[in-house]
Image (cartoon, rainbow, N blue to C red):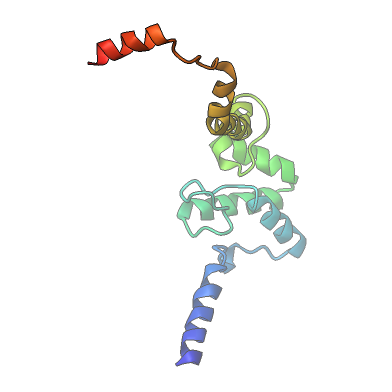
Amino acid sequence: MKQFLLSICFLFCTTLVVFGVEPDEILSDPALEIRARKISLELRCLVCRNENIDSSNAELARDLRVVVRERLVLGDTDDDVLNYVHARYGDFVLLRPKFLGWSIILWMIGPLSFIIGLILLYFGMFRNTILDHKIEKVKDLSAAEQKKVDHFIN
């Protein structure tokens, strides 16, 4: 029973790492295939969420893999292929978008949110100690003031 469960776990884990690249897509030139795989790691599948096109089985990812390989066979450089795909599909197709234009805001939101969160946490935790220093100590009531208070209470 233990071996059976172990073999099921092994089969399940090995199926998770299977790539979406089909045998008919693989180039005969190993150097071009390595370049195609490297470029594919930079491109996001537009159907899947944050998955590169090599790992996806979606039809659009397959089309993108074919386009990448066709451009490489035509003699384009890696940057030319990335620019070609980027021009057709926009910034979202890049797993690591370029650091310019509006994407600067997206790159900065994470660190700025973290810093603002730390500041709010600091003031939230130490608010009472900060306020204690600003509040003046209340003096004891005089006998006449205590009589007035007792009169209002009763």
